[in-house]
Amino acid sequence: MAKSQFWIAGILFAVTALAAVQTTTATKPADAAFTVTGKLATGVMAIGAETTGITITSAANATYELDIKDAALKKKAEGLNGTDVTVTGTLTIKAGVEVAQRKIITVTALEPAKPAATATATAPK
Image 1 (cartoon, rainbow, N blue to C red):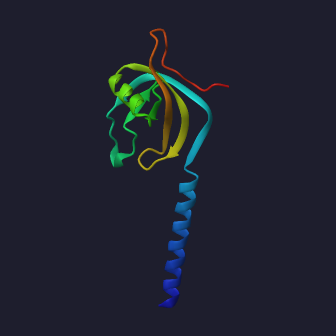
Image 2: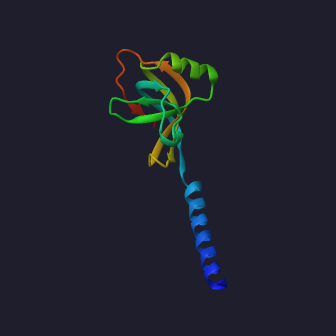
């Protein structure tokens, strides 16, 4: 019996260690400011609550979650729901459960898109 308990304990340790390694390498922040223009959606829900609740989708159909920490900026986003906006912030790639790779922009600026703006995502050089 003691030998089987030893093996079970070893397997549990290995699984726990592997999970810890995956958790610590799951987030990759970008080095520079990131800007994207597209359609803003607030009140977004996802399975397992795996969302920030606010997204922007570019014309190229790339969707980014928006993490808006400032209350006034969040209220502004709610007022612009369903419209084209331009957001600037820091892009972070985070591993998810339902979505393999979550692209999250920590927003520092949010403005209505200029009429001539096309929905694009750019990172400054």
